[in-house]
Length: 230
Image 1 (tube, rainbow, N blue to C red):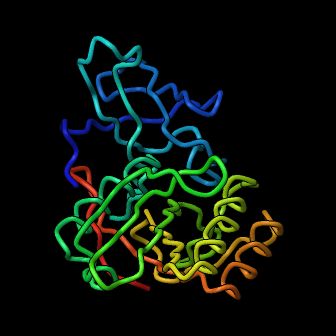
Image 2 (cartoon, rainbow, N blue to C red):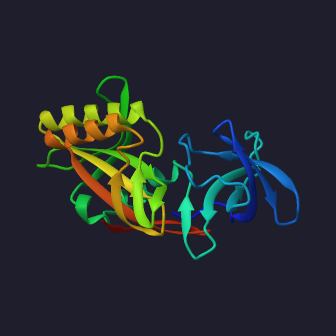
């Protein structure tokens, strides 16, 4: 998935109200960017961090920049836009280039299911059980090389696991897919100390047949690409 508009570098001044970030561009201008991330962004929103913004000239958008990446200035990046995983995954699912799910021919997004829920992807193919795929963006890392989810308490995430478990019990494939939007991590763990309820919900869901997929990414100011499975 390539960014629609070339990104521009900046320095973070502050993130506030979850969805807003004041930033300083290289020419000294201060701008406010939209931050498409409802999580805590632990370790990713420190003042002075180098970040990358996507400018836009859409008259319908109040803010003219969107915060897309954190640049760790060591060759590694973290993608902070939680809408990116679904966009990047849609490409590989439709192209059939994700080996674990390449057998499915039809890809539908945001399909209603369960109790007032929508599944990120519903995959189907003749003679195969439907596959319900829920996607989570993973950006937290508190130990070198270790990616963790979640970075804050997520009652919504626990509900998604319960809904997936019901689909598995009905004979469908139910898949919890964690997309690691960091290039410096090669391991994954649940952050049970941050949200023990979510960790318990995951254990229960897995016991009822919910599958787990963990996929890494290649990230640069040009785009985010699906990489390898952990």
